[in-house]
Length: 171
Image: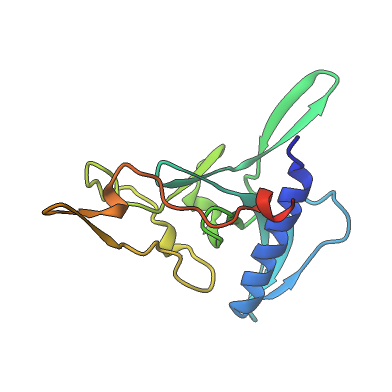
């Protein structure tokens, strides 16, 4: 069984580390009852950050932009509208962290494109490299020679070779 609490805690630590390395002062609220996980201070503004773990699927990092609560009456989803300023997203498959302002996400889901689309679409795409914290996680676009044909790995249908994931790091 996957330990989602531990996965989330590790994502939170990594996002906090990357933010600190990028020059932010990072604070953690006491307790578990805040709608945000971290506070970041750039020297002028203090902002609330909710951390999520992103999953790489078909060239896109996907993450939820809501919390889930279960009660006697069932489970429900609650978006973070007007309760946080940013989502901090850790993508263990790429070992990269991102900081997205709330207006750049939808109420129930978020996505960041890592690899080009197959149809070469560029409009209305949130590219992951535009939101990276402290570095450039863009994959190396290595060319592979297949006979006389050159194939760009980033646009091929094969998935990228993932780096060790959180799940593997916890074992």
